[in-house]
Image 1: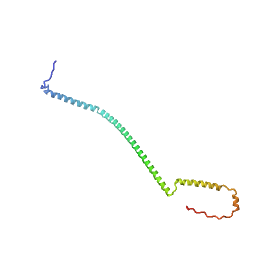
Image 2: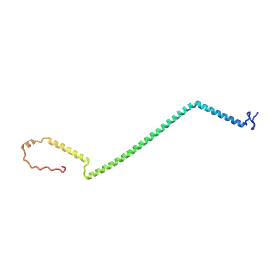
Image 3: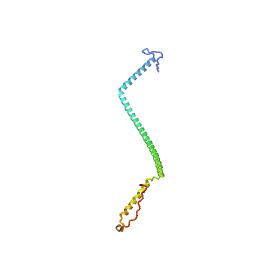
Image 4: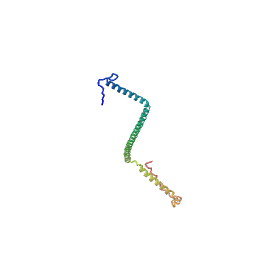
Length: 166
């Protein structure tokens, strides 16, 4: 086997030391790779740009959908909280209103003012009395015609009392 190893201090064909040649070759390859990448990027740059735009749109849509979902969820929670607070406040107002009505009713009763129920009962009684009076006045009494014809002696009539309401 014949192994050729260049001498460490030997110069290559151009007269450069071997380490310098390796560095030059490496730099040349890096330069060519960069030029190739640049040419490739120019060729496929438009396609790459369009692909990135499409991917960006997809991500934006996903983000918007997630944001809208969160907004809907938060809106629903806020509506539930508002409804709960409204029902609590309504309950408190109803309770306060009932307390107020009870106290006013007690004060009016203490002062002797009749309640709406008392007035309804009195109205019903008056209606019943009016029907009864109309019924009695419409029915002719037996012998009433004879009584009118005879004219009874005039009895001393007492004037009707005036009521305190007049």
